[in-house]
Length: 584
Ligand code: ASP
Image (cartoon, rainbow, N blue to C red; front, side, top):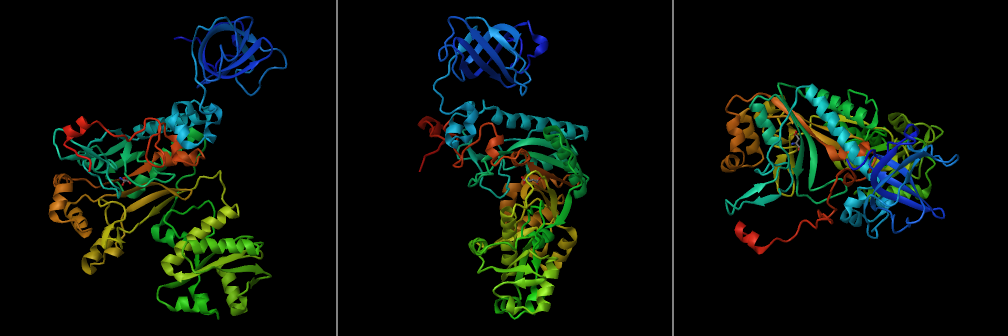
């Protein structure tokens, strides 16, 4: 090694030792002929002292120069110790000249402040950004999480298998990234949107328990929490029910939390059905760090004299729904206007509000509600004096969705969200299909390999109602973000064929795209199921960060571009010719 120690290692017990250190100049201070340099590497910082002729600030040492030094460990003079550093009791008096160095050009940004820099500049100089200990720490956390995952799953007999990257389209609802084939001109591989079909085939092969920390590729429009390539902890198991999947995932998450945060997670996680989630929280990914459940008030609203409410609830699919904000009653006229603007932006016609005062409702419209009706409103929400009731009247699904959004918005405004809390819940029994209004056909809510709820499937065979079939799909939700999704799969060829047909695929297309899967199901396929967790998103939340780019070593920006390598970029005409491709 070119060093005897790291920069995080030397302590009082090393005083008197001759050492050699390698690292980057963090800071240099000139105390009149005496230079103090903090030398940094991934392990920490050690103070160097350079005295005597020859040493020059800005020549011998500039921030972010790489240097290799030789010197002797000594005690720091009394009063100059740094109790915040493990190495804070000592310093290294270094010999002239440096053993080695490479200099650093003028910096595009100060390394310790890289997180405050414009993102494209950070990404262009990602190698410098990644020198920032605050940024490095995320990759170390990621590494620890991987080790915890591998240990937890290995102990439970899971086998880690790599599946192909150059493959055939694996539909997960996004566009494919295509790779042209040179040897088979005019033909393309697709990068996997997930290892879904391969992991199912591994079950047919009898591996029983598979996992992979898998790169997945989806050509989607990017948002803060999306990247064109991202990582899933992908798992599949045979001979199981969904409860078995939940248990394994809970164990893995316990291990990750212990390893990365030294925190004990409370398991089992709460389970709620898709319908419960929608009805109570207006979303299939409820944030349950706070309550503010959405209530439906149709019966009570029907007994009011308020025309808007009466009209809405007299329609078959109309509803009055709302939330009660604890101690929200101090809201000013301006606060109410802000809340009203918010719901209007979400598509509502307006917002009705009531302050709870002396056990009654106080509002410009309260005269339309008898004391009895007011009492029933208050009872429904178990509201107390000082609370604020907010109501929306609209078509049921729309009203619930808006109330769900209002619930999140109000909770943030009122500081009801405990930012330190991690709240996991399982959402189960998703619908199998959803109607695509634009394209006028049914499509899979998850992916077409998800098993229907078999009771519902039998009923569907009689009624033909696709919209009423529940599936055995489930999501894992953390603090209101979906971080995992999975299902018990179809393992019977006939059911798989029928599901493909239900989403409008013709026989030929089924054979062309999924013939290999159907064939595998003809050779004794076992019942199986699994899940994939979004590793980037999970880590982002766990580390309290706001973008998944913070936990990815070399991410792309919001335009799917890598400002450092400048990918994607044009290619040579010769390459295109070999591929038989012309740019239109
Ligand atoms: N392949 C699915 C996905 O990427 C996960 C699963 O069903 O296991 O969402």
